[in-house]
Image (cartoon, rainbow, N blue to C red; front, side):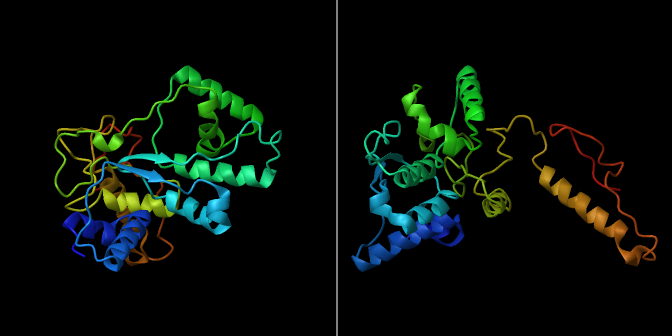
Length: 257
């Protein structure tokens, strides 16, 4: 099956979820003799029930969701149980807990925007109940207490985006591995998301080279602490060099001497 350049990049250099998705699609295409993939404008997910997924399926979904994001308008099957009246309906507690894990996994693939007063009230309520996780404790309750709207982020028209960039770039960086992948995405000559796009500036950070400056700082510390620059007894640890200062993220950071 023939893949476009973008599809090949997803297969070889995408996030773990993107690589797995492309591998599945390419394999199915080859099995059924497809010539190519075709664009879609919507999708539907059917695996929303603990009985359908099973324990192994739920674990797979949770891992997959850490680096996954929907690209088109997507709907999901009804969960099939009332999250508020499950005891009254005789649903086992273990099943409702598993169902909530599934809902959290799907919810984590989106973006959220709140009225400040509504969000403050939700956070205060969860604090009293011992809730600590946004996707696990707050998102599943929203349909039962608040008005909700969804925005098709993939249709956002950002000026200045280059052909090699990913339209509607977004990542959940809830794990160290996901954060590492996201850092790689914004690096290099052809980043998947260009932090230096002059037609779509990121406010609050006037120096997109901040990460490079931090790297220079680390290299500077390694040089001055290296025994080759003097005896081992002369080596010292510098935690706040003069050239670094106490600058905010939107202030220039001078290079090390």
